[in-house]
Image (tube, rainbow, N blue to C red):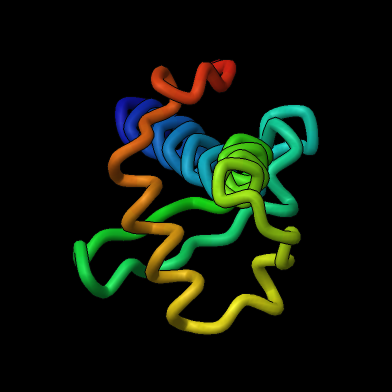
Length: 103
């Protein structure tokens, strides 16, 4: 009888631990991702840091081109010099300076 209790206790303990691991291994639901399917990370060599490209960064990039009074160049088509110039500008212009909504 005592060995049966030990077996059942070990079984339920193992099942609960496996269940927790299963729940943690599940991919996040769509509503938990906050619509992050368009985000990308870019490395800034001069500052040796990463930047996430999201809606906020896209707005800042448009502001950058507006302040330069030049035609907008899509990030995907920008060359290395243009990207480097943007990251240098971005380090001097935080979200609060640009008045970008921080959520």
